[in-house]
Image (tube, rainbow, N blue to C red; front, side):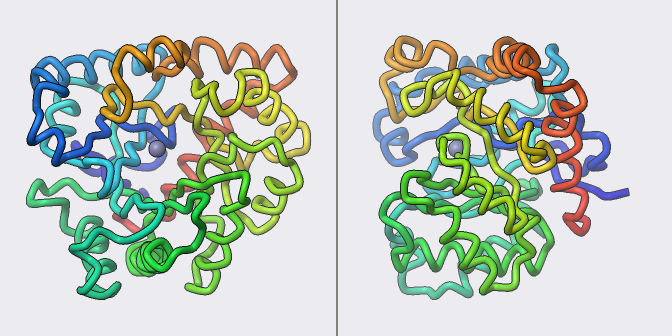
Length: 318
Ligand SMILES: [Zn+2]
């Protein structure tokens, strides 16, 4: 038995099934939403729409999604609980902070130990009185690099990981090879890099960079299928094909980084600009393309089922 925290309670890692390792349900600018709620619209309709989309994914055979929405992206667990009540899919939620520059002002004068303590509380006790425990830690490093704020979040995430055993999943900017900066900070904090997923690695076509991350032991998130403004469908598929051919299927996880609703863009723009960005794209389009280009069923199973299980089964009961 190796229990993983989900929104509906603990699930054995062996029961997670096909797992999409980097998704969102709602990404919201909380203060804007509170001031201009019409952008979000009817709460019940949004919840029902998210649950319907996740049920469609479950009907394709998926067992679990990891919702990597952290502080800074409008995480609100009671709303996620309402979605979880309406879908059979397991939802694993995250704690951590999403920033490319500074920590939120709340944390600025309280020190990083306080940040670490709150992350640990989210993992061991639950988030905001809901009793829902975070099953994974999230942090980000973008083009701005290791600013003081970003570095303090990375170190707090590493310390919370060491205290609890739950894995770490990141956002990176691939053009500046930020995954290597993250690995260096985590290593300084004593993190076993095989417990880390370097996110958005699928935005890169630099095999040398990706193999450097793998050589240090981490998993790569090939996790933005459908975001074709950054990389085309073929570029994203070809990188997975190439990495599998080089024997790295045991270090890759697949996902979309999709949100049932995100307020960062006008809603119609998403459908027009990214028509393939939705929870079903991997099942409908990516897996057939991978198979067509020589990726085996066993390698697909490794990326979608075995790797997520391995990542979570060492979570130490949280
Ligand atoms: Zn994301």
